[in-house]
Length: 301
Image 1 (tube, rainbow, N blue to C red):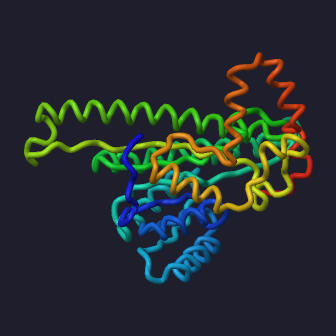
Image 2 (image 1 turned 60 degrees about the vertical axis):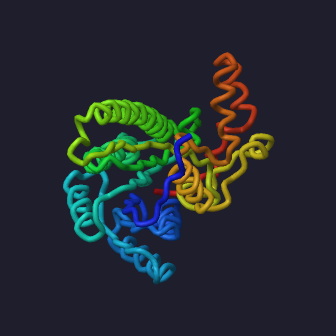
């Protein structure tokens, strides 16, 4: 386990930061002494969120609001430039922007499904691709990608959303291995005096990636969705967005955990998939009520 990360004086970006998990995470980052740039699609919501964060933390580090559509390269570049000009180089990225449309696969439009993948996956790729080079040049960075409990098993009525969140988990894991390779290669180079000789000291590369997998949250994007019966007792609703924000800041960032699931019982999906035959696993999932969990869904992106 890596040494705990101190967040004070770090510069962070939270995409989708104007509400829900993003806003709660920005609030907790400010509590830890970070400067925070809130990136979100809606200009009015961004301005309102930034103003509210300043009210909550009048003595805290700086808060910046940036209008940014994570599916547009030009928006990402502009928000990145403004963030670094106003707050400084970005140390921490929380990829939280998301989009959801519930419903059976053939009942939804291809436009909705394309938007789901573009925001939930391509947006994560694009923002990370823009900010990661600066982290590598400074040899420090933390990237937390918000996946989902539905990134651990298929859910009826959430096919494309689940697919996008599975992909986010795979992306995060792959980037974590790349970061480890870079860290090892840099350490070898430094020991040979190839990278830090001029400074007269060794300089380590410390870039880490984590994924966070929330279950259904009582309010917000997934309002109305819930697992009933025995499944609901095993994997209860998450009470608030702050439960996930706390997991992001304390577990993923400060403790450096590579995979964080809330509630913790979400991990049962991974365990059972590994030990049960596929047909039996599918039957268990259905018996627990997972595949009827979207029937009262009334949330939105």
